[in-house]
Structures are given as C-alpha cells and as structure tokens.
Amino acid sequence: MTKIKSVTGWTRFAAVLLVFGGAMTILAGISAIANDRIFLTTRHYLFSFDVIGWGWAHLILGIVILLAGLSLFRGATWARIVAVILAGLGAVANFLWIPHYPFWALTLLAIDIVIIWALCVGDRRAHT
Image 1: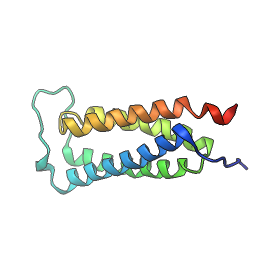
Image 2: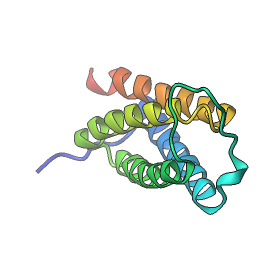
Image 3: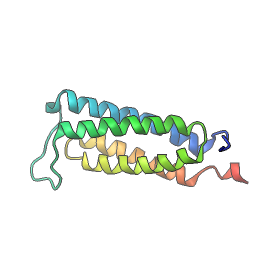
Image 4: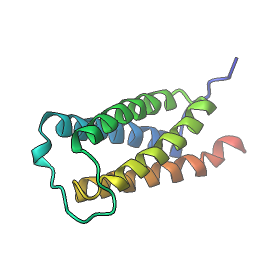
C-alpha cells in the first residue's frame, strides 16, 4: 500500500493548474463539438484536422487531465507521474490546436509546460 503524504508547494500549484487546464480543455472540446463554426480554420497549415474530431479528443483528454489533477491533491507518486505524462499530451494537443484557436491553445500550452516544470521540480523541502 502506498503512503499518502500531504501535498504542499509546487505539487499543489500543479494540481490546481491541472484542474483548471482540464476544465478549460473540456470547454474547448464541448465548444468544438457543439458548433465547429466558431473556430477559424486556416488554410495551408501543416496540420489539417477535423474540428469536431479534435473536439472529442479535447473533451476526453480534458476529463482525464481534470481527474489526474484531483488525484494529485492526495499526494500519490503515481498521480505525479501520470500528471506529467498527461500534461505532455495536453501540450502536444494544444500545439496542434493552434491553427483553430491560437490564443486559447497557446495559453493552455503554457499552462501545460508550467505543470510539467512544477511536478518535475517537486517539493524539495518535504524530502529533506
């Protein structure tokens, strides 16, 4: 059985950002599924995807990211590892989302990078 430790510092910050980023990714996915005409589709972009398909991908990824953020509050080591992986997937998904909604995608991309950094830095004071 894994020992549950209290969450402090960067881990708590990353958990809050994961919950926020997951919720925003869910909203982007729902928006793309409900009305794909609100997103601008640029021509001649290297990556060309269907907006509704991307909406479903964002919705599913957002739900999983939100759940990982909530589980990170418990302080389990597995949650930290899963959160880093999911934040990396979220960063890739938001990078590919740039041609459809640039400001939103770049904002979430920055949040995902900060999450990865915060989880990799960890809580050094808790281990000394």
